[in-house]
Length: 416
Ligand code: FES
Ligand SMILES: [Fe+2]
Image (cartoon, rainbow, N blue to C red):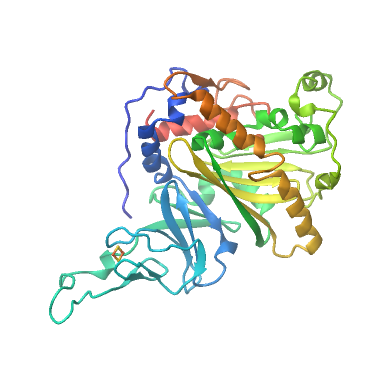
């Protein structure tokens, strides 16, 4: 497996370390290029999609890891494969459809054909014609396949890696795998998609679902209607590397807490005047039997799995240059859901996504941050909620612990 050499840079990180993030990290073009190599094509596992999206032998899906187009396939023997979507001849895209079913991947430019595992099986006119043209006699098909990635799965989620060294997916996820197993406990059924372009650096969004501090403050819908309040029973779990995190909240567990009430009076999200004409969106079912109303799980560098009441979705973050990113939402339920359950998931899906009653504020805040950071040549964020250490803040949601841990890993991967 070919391993790209890591890139370096000449930037200097603030002396305080991971409790600060300099604003140049959100806009610098060289840093962005380095992230593609050291992070996205480095020692990480990147989400590609659901097994349910490539259900049959021959199924494929095109997606990205960082800016690199890749194809996820299911071969004739049922095995999953991921290949770089770039012809081994002269670099053309070999797969142009988002989804489909095929017996082979065939490049339109000069008809080099590959099987679904990425091996070259045929190159047009490779023997020439009437003694003219053709590839050199020593041309070895086996040496000219598509670039193959490692593939690993957990509970129907498919991840791939460019790295030969990164540990198997479940080991890499560590304690956070439990949050995935809790939700994805049986076969899945895709309900729909939503892709939004966010005009902000990918890291502004990556920080957001790691940021349990904001949930109760920014989101009117959470605070006002009680799906997530700081006064409720809640917690945060990080894996030991600090790359991955999930936090959870149990609606309806609030105690009458004077300190919370005094602070909440000032929160935009505790606006008592707001009422819903149709409150059915708030009716959720405790389908996992543990009272958890919200669980937001984030893996480094670009994946989110959410359970917001009964709305279930993955979010895949795809950087598109230093100042913008696409966020791909895939909504799903379980294969054995009845019609009423599916309707409930679709209704509650309105809380999430590009125009989600909750999520709309996340993208908006990322875009406002990007504008406020300007050219990024001065200034840095302050990340000391819950303390200054990687483990300070413990399991409290009122903490930026997961964000400190993100920047700690980021700095190491980037040599900063
Ligand atoms: S670039 Fe693909 S066959 Fe030539
Ligand atoms: Fe949010």
